[in-house]
Length: 537
Image 1 (cartoon, rainbow, N blue to C red):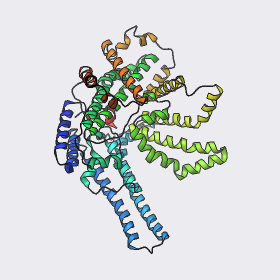
Image 2: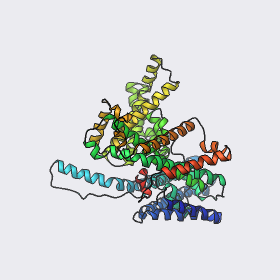
Image 3: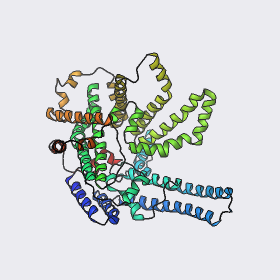
Image 4: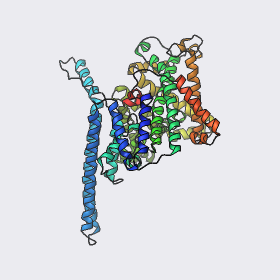
């Protein structure tokens, strides 16, 4: 049941109707039934995964909370005469127990995710290793289709376990309400990731019917459909054609490759951010605020800035649970101290700033997919960001020497274009049929381009699944997307600003967008929730 299908909107209408009609204390139960109903609509084969994650995480959280409660009760029972040292000792023992439970349970949850994602990759590479040495041996190739939303509800569950272990939140006592936190249907397809202390509590609270929530939520859904159906699904024909094995096996030019990676960049942004807009819009209609996942990534001035704007909930999760723990862990601090003693204070400071991004982006790479292309892409991003941090003082001195006005619009424009070009390399690495093909395509970008292709003089640009009329629709749609991005980058809140306009203009704009999506959206048979690119992760 795709987020852009008629069946989904019919399903959503029914959920909203029942949700606001039942007594408020039962609203969470309506959402739980709806969430499992939505998940079952995608198939029953993988239901065991989400049930296991729910039950295991719930029990682990309750066990950790019980240890903390016992510790507090023990201190209270000992009365006021207990010394500070004794209290500290009891708390330390409890913290060690909780930390052990926390690590073991988080690793088991992560182990399920890793097994599902890596089984096929490792068995295939082991067989290739045997073949290389001509050994008469092989292992059965294990190919497991990842369940819908596995990464998202696994990461949410691990975040919950860590927060309970740290004492930031108390473990949820009600199994049904915790099950809703894991399975909340708008976010199950492609996030965003969220914390129990933020969204988990909202899911349990009663919500009254508010016109603004319905209105703003519906507008956000419509905007998401525009990005997904009008832009992403139309431009995907170009990306698929240029990154196909047939195309890459022949002769190609840098202009064609850039056209393809430009198409793929708008495809993946329109698909992922459009899907997230629909998710957040659905949640808002139910009175629930989900985290923002994108902030105009096309206007990023560096790769670090890009990753602060792209898939922000994953970035926040990685910063909290990977980046800072890696920076502060004993091996890294020891290495930092060693570098500081040998090469100076700046070198010592750079060690955590280089090691932590390496770890984070390696994990982000394999999170997207266990293949050498994703691994290389993760390391590529890590190297770019780490080197930028390490060489920052050099860039500052160079700008001063060349008298570059780093506050000028022209310099910001240069940074945006530079970042996009660096990002294009990243997109080619993951989208090309193979790493070897990716290298060939990247090399072509640095050779003379066929400008007749780009200008449409020979008509070839219209031979990749998008004709002249469709290209015009794409041009207008992407122009609207960029204009809205510029306005938002300037601080404008689009829906709130539109709401202050005259009634005819306000609803005229909404109706115009609705008709535009109906007429120019790309529809087809066989749509399901996995049609979203990030649904597979």
